[in-house]
Length: 106
DNA sequence: GCCATGGCTAGTA
DNA sequence: GCCATGGCTAGTA
Image (cartoon, rainbow, N blue to C red; front, side, top):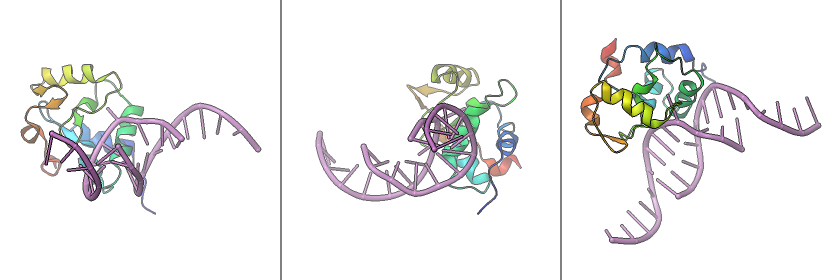
């Protein structure tokens, strides 16, 4: 039995993602030592849509699809576009370039 | 038993 | 498109 995932740990990582960059549910899970908890990360974000301070909208799916958002995908896409992220439909135009390296954000 | 996921197969074009 | 995974909540006893 492992330690349980803490919402605060998720937020601590999230606030380090700069504008114009994104991360993945799975990447966050791995960074916290819970490689299989990607789905749980999504639930945590949904539960606490702590509006402004925590940039929940910078978390997308591992295949570059925009993923979900408590206030709707459309809203999420708007926010990301405003930060300089380009889309083709619901997929990011250059996912590789926008994906943040969580290790390097110390 | 739900889900803001993800990885892997089967099986079509 | 199937299903394991992990955290949560609704709702029964």
